[in-house]
Image (cartoon, rainbow, N blue to C red; front, top):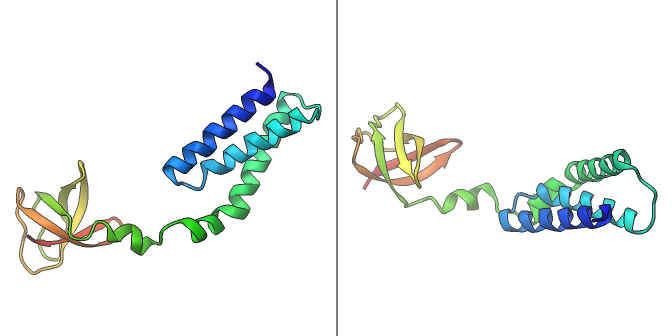
Length: 142
């Protein structure tokens, strides 16, 4: 199989992966691979080192110059991303006392949690997510 086909297939696969996951990162790796493939297809003589350098340079430039703009244009804001969690039910794994953190289980993972009220939530109790602040999930009694 020729190098331009390999680079082209890799590029398309990476771009499709980014469309599926929405990272706005892998798409630039795909663009670098497609650019390298296009140069080879047009007959530009490149050894393996030159191919990898071209791929790396185009990918890095894309990330540096365009990633933040794409996220601003197409990505959800932090507020929108966290909004989906509000009102969801969680299970307290480790007591959550006012002014202290504990742990909850949400979507199969344990999270650091704090309470928005002035009462302790006990392990095993259900609670509701009120908001997120960084990596801390704030909960209230159900």
